[in-house]
Length: 275
Image (cartoon, rainbow, N blue to C red; front, side, top):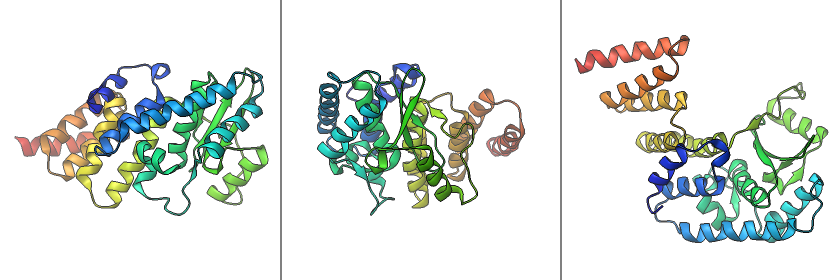
């Protein structure tokens, strides 16, 4: 589609399994950087897919470590993708177009690249919601291999996962059930975009943060917390009617609980202003 926001609306109506993660992230990047060369990025995504498919043809379908190595050889070695350690907080690291131009990015942005390539090859894969660090898992029939895409696709053993967890949470942390919780495609995209929201808000750009939040709602219209956040931002901007509408949509999705009670308090305040 020529209009990226119309494309995002269409993605919002798809089931998770129907979402093309590379294309969806590309549409989000187009909205974030309208002057960037998105068509060049689209061609590059196609090149990545073709290169991975070529590797996959002669491979053992059940050898997950070999798949991980093949992806690393294509994406890290051949195309030069790696994590950006020097300018980690640069907003470009969360924009897929800029990531394809620079071959640098945040873990989740690189994860989108890896998932795009793996799925093009027909390999089952998903994002991993590891604490404070996005990982990718390649899926087998009864097992999986987890890789750190920020570090060139390093295969993560139990020991390396434990060491990473200790760096994030402290020396007393240990691996626990659910630590490798899989993420849906939609959640991966929201995590990617949330980095842009956070950076805009940290820079004092409340309106920019709200616009980014609204783009997230296009692809995830049933995400209640996004509606609540949009309500808060609209309220801070004194956009009373818009804040009211967002809070009402949140309550439609989450009618009960402590958070819902707090939203009702804010909604009463807004209604008194409008009246």
